[in-house]
Length: 157
Length: 157
View 1: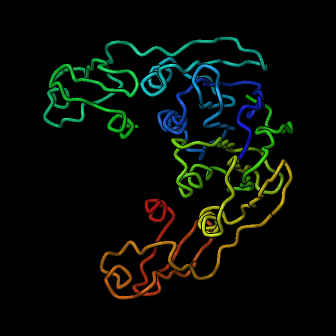
View 2: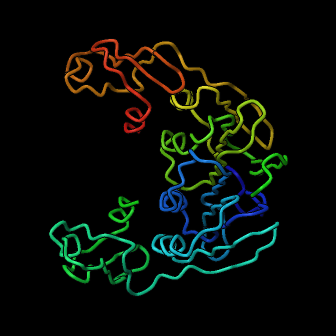
View 3: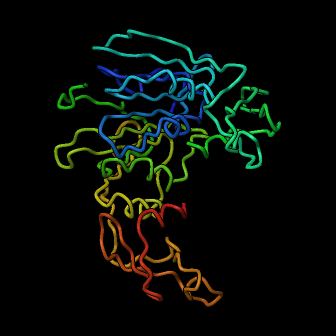
């Protein structure tokens, strides 16, 4: 077995792009999915899973070269990795560092899984959810009180 | 944009485990899926996608720490990344290096997508396919001549 206590930099520094760090261990592939990264388009993406972390036990990381995440993308990441930090890198330097934040109320990002919910009708109603639990994620629909769990949400991305 | 011509080691060396190199660009996530790596279990896994490569243009890599792939796993990788190389690492040294090889006839690994195919019945018949094309992969069922493409095969893993 590999010695997991040894401190090594598993993924090298990048010149320009975004580093998503402190992703809950095992959730990097979900983050990749949410960002619609398939690897089929240009740009280097590196992913490290289950890396030992002082604060989290294990953590995941994603580095996306040549792409700076938009704020709506950061909001989506908060759904699945509420302790993640986002670093924007320009010329090897961190120019912006932010922690994702899961709001108490989620609007628009997620659709209700209940087909009979009014938010899925033609009524002019925005999908709205309350965060019942952060990790594991559990959302409750404002209109029909349906519960949405992480797997239901991942299906939408 | 990041300078993709600069030679950098994007993922560090590992002590023990398996390095899958020269994966067709954009297919690392398929390899991960075939190996049933979800990141939910122990062990560090690093993935690099769309890394510049002299021979392939771009390539993907997967490093799995603390796990040596079995030959049936290597055979599955050949389905999606026919030019991949598999390196088994012990104490930072490559102890075994092999190129995956896609055979002309595929037995057992894949099931026929046609529910009426005799290989999906209770008859004692082994699923058998001919490789009509390597990349993109196209398999032809020995029994019912159904064509299976990469996406059909990925669904089985």
